Image (cartoon, rainbow, N blue to C red):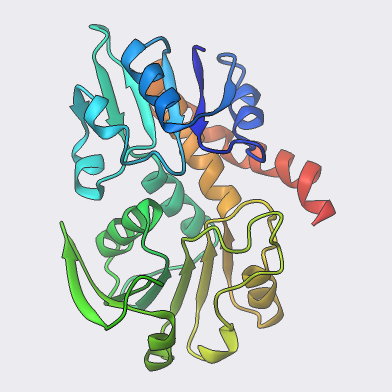
Amino acid sequence: MEYGSIGQNMTYSYSKIIHEALGAYPYELRSLEAEELNALLESRDFKGLSVTIPYKKTVIPYCDHLSQLAAEIGAVNCLYFDENHELHGTNTDYTGFLYAIDTAGISVRGKKVVILGNGATCQTIKKAVTDRGASQLVVASRKVETSFEASTGSSACLMVNYEGLTDHADAEIIINATPVGMYPGVSDCLIDLRAFPCCKGVFDVIYNPYYTALIKQAVDLNIPFASGLSMLVAQATAAAGYFTGKGSFYEKENERIISMLKREFVQNN
């Protein structure tokens, strides 16, 4: 494999379609168990990889160099080599998330943000919304028993369980950073947006389906929303820049590819 995406289950991924739409290199999807991942990374028999659930932290020790952004987030989703064949790890999910909310017209500056889930994607989003000036940050996790203040790098937040969200009905931005609602469990949803009357923006990291149960409710309530599809495409074009050494060259393709995917897949959601 030269270029591709790796994760535990790549069955429903759009990544091959996105990367091959750039016309720059062939691209594979590979579902790997932990021991297979270890063998691939030790062999270094690839040119560039996108990394997804659950390996965004696992790959870090294999990197010769870690970008400052990836180090601050504590997660890598893009691996590429330099001219000396040294392996670099960075995080393009950060770029993808900001692209998604920006193009949807969702601003987090000065707003109270609630993030559902506390995995690797949450860490990326925490960093992004903190950098963008969110006034308060609340993270809900099933693993939390009692609310507590937490701080990771530049991101400080209040950790709560889902029952504890009743105390945060004044949240202005709601972000789902969990797989809840992903195909095939498309009717699943962690919260009811009607419990958050101050909500001014919704983001769902899920891209399949495009209209998750959470986003459908945002549409019904006339709340601006951003789909994980925009994030997926923008992180991929950013990764392509690292793979090829062309920097931001492929970012101009974002809207074309998003439109292509929506025509092909969204009409059936």
